[in-house]
Length: 227
Image (cartoon, rainbow, N blue to C red; front, side, top):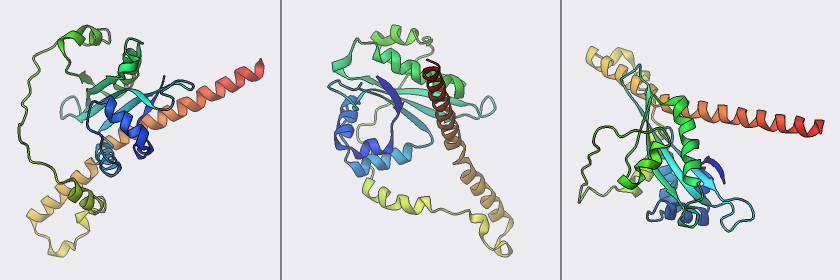
């Protein structure tokens, strides 16, 4: 099994998208909505997928997945905390060690960028996560809303393009700005700047991963050349 990041192009492939959402045990989203969710998650969620080996029935298809939700804290100097979510392995590949493999991959990421990692699991999976260094701590509680307001995704998708074109309000004419408005503009500038913090963390990881892969390829080439 090859493990990598979930790509935008994966969700453009109907077969891959269908198998991915079946893996999550969730309704299959259409391409437009899936891509919309992908863009909204970018910068704060890392989703890893395990891809079936060449020559197998599930070649180039997702057979395992895990997501790491990054939360920037005010504590510990703004350290990011990680939340492990959506750990799933295809029923056709259970008891093959794929859950351990993809969890190990995710934990390598969190050890480099997260000050603390938390997750929720069912009691019978407690021993599995303990093998990855987790300990039982506190009590997990949740509240399930029976009838939440249904999001208007079609409108959000339409409006998302204008959100991406948001500009820095500090470009307004300073001669017409009073003290209270200046404070509001300053807060807006900070908010706009904050949007780049988590994506920068993701980009740093992807860059380092790419460089590591290049170095590994170079070493393999040199080894073969010597042989």
